[in-house]
Image (cartoon, rainbow, N blue to C red; front, side, top):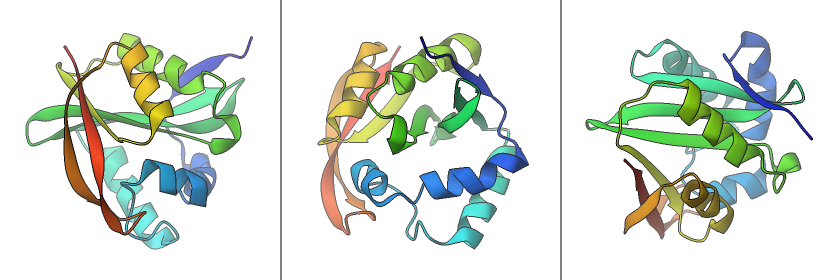
Amino acid sequence: MVEVALRSVEDSDLDALFDQLRDPESVRMAAFTAKDPDDREAFDAHLAKVRTSADVVLRAVTRDGHLVGTISGFVVEGDTEITYWIDRAVWGQGIAGRALALFLDEVEVRRPLHARAASDNLGSLRVLEKAGFTVIGTEVSYASARDAEIEETVLRLD
C-alpha cells in the first residue's frame, strides 16, 4: 500500500509544482487555472504570496515520500475553500482522497468548507463527495483553461 502524507511546501518543490500545474490535460480538467500556466514569473509570485499568507494553509502531497501535488485551504469573501492538485501521473490511485482526508484531520480550518470543480470533472467531484462534501449548487463561470464559460459545481462540508 502506498503511503500518502502531507508536509510543508519547500523551495525545492517549486520546479516540480510548476511542471505539474502546466500539464495540458490537468489544466483542461481543472479548468479554473492561472491565465497562463506557462508564466513562471506569475507562478513564483503567486506561490510566494500564498506561502506567506495568514489566510492560506498550503501543504505538499507526497506519495511514498515523493511530491505528487498540493492541497490548501484559503478564505474567499469570508468562506473557507479547499482545493487540491494531483500530478496526472498518479490519478486514479486514491491519492487525492487520502490527501483530502489527511488535510481534514490534520489541519485546523474554519468550517463550513467549500469546494468547487468543473461539473465535468467527475473524478474530483467523486473525491469531494466521498469526503462528505455535498453539492449545494452550480454556477457558470469563465474558465481560463478552456477560454469559455462552463458550469462549476459548488460543494460544502459542515
